[in-house]
Length: 314
Image (cartoon, rainbow, N blue to C red; front, side):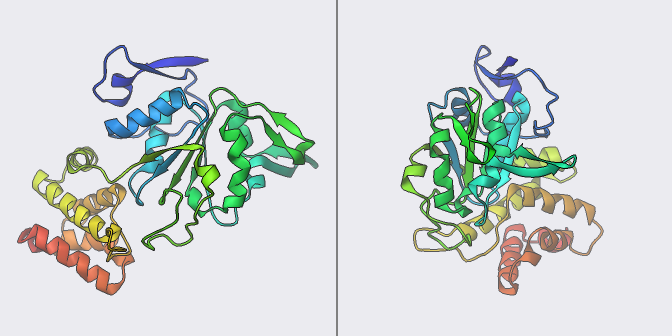
């Protein structure tokens, strides 16, 4: 059974009271993602809801830098609409058959167990293919027909035919937009087949605006003073600029600070409040110790410049 959800109340954004989106009435399905505190950005949310409402034979491809919140956007929308999700992280050895299913020993006999694609198509769930640009383009070509709404045929199971549920949606995420990794930031990213990419509408997501991240930090780490939060966000954005780079080429850093990493830094700063320099100590454990020594030094210099006297006294 379906249910209409008021957009303003459901997602905490400004919208006309009568504007609704359709989801599922059953809130107890085990595949519904866990709901957590989340601040939605209006523009990306608008695109996702439009796709969920009327896909018009498209898939949805969400691209953006690592840690920008591509997957969490979808899962938190699904959590509020009671929409079950099957999420798969792609890699170079993943095959279409892994998504369809396989014969498995069940109670002493071999039975065909449907994979995430077959289940989502059959039951009207969301299928999220994360890091899809790591998967072999020749394998992904097998999804062309199902994206357009054609029946799913499973040769391994005697030619079983599954007609797509009207609520089935296919969503992909990737650090590239299907044209390969131009800056050399992401190992293993492959250029995707043009015919496959033509079946998707594209949504590009960047890192959140400082005001939004400040709201998130204030909610998740309320003990952190506002002036320190503001400087942490400035440091995060400087790190991101050096990671992403620009038209001239790749960035200078091989690591970046996601919103998740920013929250980790703030939380650890509060936890290690008694350390000689809690900000530096927490920053190392939240991010910098993953970087090369030269990069770690650059990250520390960024933080010292932004925080000034607070860098040694906090």
